[in-house]
Length: 352
Ligand SMILES: Nc1ncnc2c1ncn2[C@@H]1O[C@H](COP(=O)(O)OP(=O)(O)OP(=O)(O)O)[C@@H](O)[C@H]1O
Ligand SMILES: [Mg+2]
Image: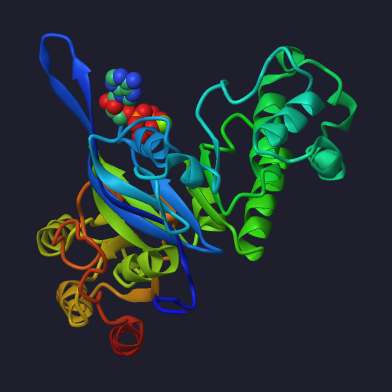
């Protein structure tokens, strides 16, 4: 087949823009040139601080808001030219509580929405019951949605979206307000969907969820794309520079001042015995050791810090690249620092 690729792009978004009109002021540019793709079998996180434009982006992708510019392509279908065909491949759980009919029961909602998609209630019934069971909603199947708790409504909304069986699933903060156990269940479900080859775009402020389920993240701030990278790659890039040093004697004030001048993000524990710092380049470790050596401060250990995704995210939205503060980049940054740990261990052995 001409143009066929081994991992088909299920979702392709190009240069999306949306400005909301404001009374007496210039329009608010909520999304400003955002573009990304998502493959079959991929879970992509859409991240960004409050007001970054995530929900607006998701609403444009599922056709709820018309973009001012840009294109959305779902399973090869151009959403502007063939909106109905495009939305056939998408199911979404949006922010807030408008995903369900409150006057219908839990089970009726599942069957109603499937009917909307042209599926027969009889055919989807077993899968609907299985999902109710899975989300611990079996005993609420005949309760009105209006009478469900907020978390139960959220679970049901996710069940409705999953049951649709679409290639692409958009989940806007799916685990918000869910108890720990249900949150785990949703994560498990998302991973299963990806294993089945489905594509999930999810927004979340919970970085543990992101680190746990997302293969890739698209980060936006002030409506603009600041990163589009594999989670693993981001963690690796940032991890190469964060070090924790344990000292055999407290750092002097002069040494601390010198370190702060020489390296970014230096923090010294109150006891003066622990130093966290960024060693950007391979030879930075020697500069650090020189500072210690001057006062004959022994170093007991120097370890790379396991970077949590939360820190990576903070750096990204503050416009700090991983290696040298080059700032945000579309795609990959220049390779980070070489691993200085081995060289440092040798030095520690000599100095200590
Ligand atoms: N219907 C609307 N009318 C006017 N402005 C809007 C509308 N919806 C969103 N905005 C504005 O657009 C910007 C982006 O909002 P959006 O809801 O997309 O952000 P978000 O990234 O989803 O944030 P959050 O993390 O808080 O959910 C915000 O400044 C918001 O106030
Ligand atoms: Mg939002």
